Length: 318
Image (cartoon, rainbow, N blue to C red; front, side, top):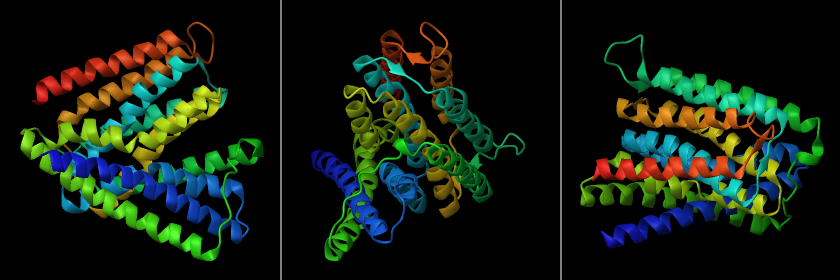
């Protein structure tokens, strides 16, 4: 089992580095074709931070490991919300933009509620799944969200990240090819070794997905938000997390269910309740104490909730 753990860690590192290489190559290629920073930021860079979750989910969907699909999405969102925002908020109180408070946080809550409704199929008895049609709904909402972000950023170009570098043609294609290879190989290593670990420990794929895989695929968001918080770039710290949670449900689950309809285990409802409650807590926190601000004690509450949840999850799963 130790070899499986080491291969899993290597797979996660390969996923994350592969996403970095792909973003570097694709951004530089787009620059050569005079694509704007706005378009690059909305497509290539946004895809890069979500690429680990996307690759793991598509491979899990193809192989029929449906519990890993949902565990990765819901687990990553809970990790983002409770751990990453919690740590970032302890580093520095997080002042949140009005658009994030009134639009993006409610949209993130709506995404979680919509997933709950579609996955439980309340109108079809004993049918728990996310169908291809459900996936189409998610992707349609994702395109709408992307358009909203485009309109918002185009009205304030200063918010658009402009870090794309310029490389030679050989380096560009080298980054793209090696990055894609890293994503594919890393994704296979993560999925296959996670299954082996779950079998060896005699725990469900759900437990492994909600803990190790979810935390591992959220490492890009963790790094980005902590660096942003230490530099007092709180807009990036909060926007990165809320945007990622919306991406995960609308884009990644949408694509995963189009690849293969995904059977849903109703036991994931408790994790969706936690996600909805955590998002609602974040929204309410914007109106307690200093307005539109996540104070340190509120960030601490988020972390305590996650620690308690993880202890409960592992104690009941082992």
